[in-house]
Length: 322
Image (cartoon, rainbow, N blue to C red; front, side, top):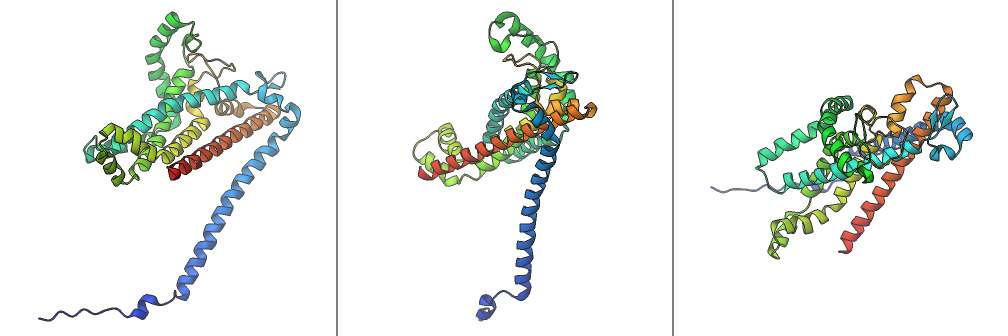
């Protein structure tokens, strides 16, 4: 039996795009451009609205608003330095905990420490944390985290109170419970993006490391993680941005006290918690000050994202040179 192979017409393979293909391509380009412009316009509109409403407070308080420590509605004296401190301090502490745990989980789930099916189960459970509402985290922190950490916190204060980080006792809501809950809330973001970054590292790089005589942990920590450092840095920046803007859980757990302290057990405040707590009952003058505070929170978030982008570019250039 003779088998015949029929070759396709070369004209059908090399013909130019049809008019319909050109139309679809142009429509896609136009829709994509309009979408990008719409996003930029939306951000500009939000900034305009917030800035317009905050303008009287900016003119009235000036730069002193950023270094003031009092929030007194009766005398119309407003300052957000304690809130800026609380926002950055709590977010950095949460990033240290959540970032370390998140990257560790990403390594654990991508480097064959678990059977594939069990790894998928763990990955799904971690991603489900992102679906839990913020207020539920806050309630869990009040009824579970605070009673759990209070004895240890008070013991540290009794025996090591001379250390600034343990200089106060934990009587209820405070910085430590808020940081613990916040670190859990940013964990899915850090872990998911870090897993994707580590998973994109070519397996041949790992094989080459083993071929040079490295141990398993040397290959992971000295080859795979540095190769994926760009994606891991992006995960940490996104997690930090999530921590900066978290509202309800921190408003319920951090104590809402306008003070600056290094103590992990003292009450504090954040910009997002300030907005959530004061805005519903704010009069016009206070509302303008709150809009000023919201503008500063947007500025801090923008600066963090710019710094994260610069770190990512620096990491990519360093990897290319290496």
